[in-house]
Length: 534
Ligand code: AHR
Image (cartoon, rainbow, N blue to C red):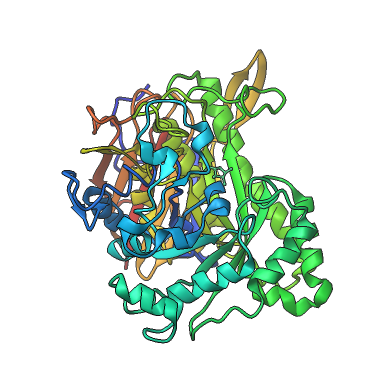
């Protein structure tokens, strides 16, 4: 095993290299939407109450009730967009409960109350509605993000959706709802562009068939006033590889005419990596521990997550059968690993898990997949931001920590808005034992992008014990200077806790310019090479 922070070794002769990366500057793939670095905050467990919202009178440092350290961290990673209020919660939520004077807002049973069995705060079971539309949009403003609101299709009529849009976007003084907004201190319209029309409408969002959902989608999105701005409607898309949902939804949509495709910005795809049993899918028994795992479970998790690329290309192909010009893009608004309960940083927080180095490598791998498909993926939202699944941050009362996943999102921020570049990776495969049978996984993968004169190359080495000495060729570029940032650890289970916040951290060194360019990617690592070109 390499030393803890082997980092990336400076350049030396290419002898002994076993891997090669070739970045083709002359082969652009398309602009990487900043929004694929998006986030997701559902009113679930400790995500909103305790995670994002601590309240104006809290002893926890806050800005208008919003956790200050969270705001500061999210500014650093250039968070582009945040989805709220769900998730499954969205289809039980009445947005009117979360507006008006906070002391007059009703308390409601949270969608997730039935899952609350442990010692969690009352606000997790019974929603005090202190954090509603105003507070969420304010949070987005503070961190420089765009809001992405998910509407309730299962239990509210379409009219309520129009009213929510009106509340958010109608000009100051124009409507009664604009006046209500102004009374709360928000005179100017929020200008919310992204609207999710339900969530997982094939399941918790109403158990619709794709045809039934398409009808609801039409009802919800027809003739919604746009108040001079763009409204981008995102349809509830498929669960993992449910091609029939994608096909059935679009077939029904175009039954009224192909023009109907123009009214859809994106189709939401959800994929969680959870089945580590190497056996049949069983939602409860298939999950394994977040922190305690064998190398085989490391690779199996990555394998499950790596399906994302074929899901993107598969759904894209199905979409193309009907939407031939590919007007509609994919919005992967929930992704990440999902483990069994037991590793919560805050006991009692439901659907919270401890992100380790494994999840950082998983996240780097997933972001690279999105970067490699910039013409297909318009937005993606890691599930979920704080105190939940693949969280960037964990927080409880005055305690706060950046997880290894949070560090990866920071490392990859340089890709936002860049031109994706075709990049060739060649490296020995990983061989591992899968219950007595040989299995393989790819050796090195990543993505590259060019933002003016700045080239960013991100590389994942999934091997738990072998580094990869790699020759890097930047075809068509002259390097002036650069830096190399690596996230790794000698223990694949390493993670950051409230008590030990810096176990897994970033290590940056200068890129020494030489030809050929040779870097060693440590085992179990994510690396970002940032290069200034002449
Ligand atoms: O992210 C947790 C839940 O997973 C979401 O509420 C739901 O959309 C998905 O099934």
